[in-house]
Length: 172
Image (cartoon, one colour):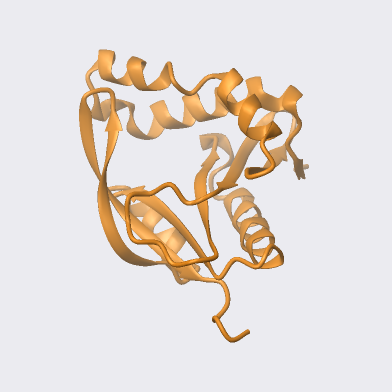
């Protein structure tokens, strides 16, 4: 059974662990070990705790016997021209044992609802250009490519695609 709830500061260690495990499982093979470790060293429980406590960020967690996945929203930070009233989907990670079990769908539905309830007109995110599974997932929700940027992992630059989804039209 999976339950969902917002994050509390006590969840920072679990979130950092899910991030690390998911990132290594999905992308670890792409990087030199020192680049990967340099990057992961920046994704600490302390950093996540500060974001949880920051009212500009929101986390939604999927719990089973452990944290199965999470989504994090925040202010737009991507280096692309961004329309007003945009919220950024900063991270959506689900541990491999929970893939294909509807966790990502529930997290995304929460993110879309949260964005709309806060008056966002757009949600944007970035995804690694060769992460086809994630790109298909986001495209099912109507996300479309609007740009690209270099996502740095240590000294290694990955090509990311910036995707954007219209939550509501300006006249709504």
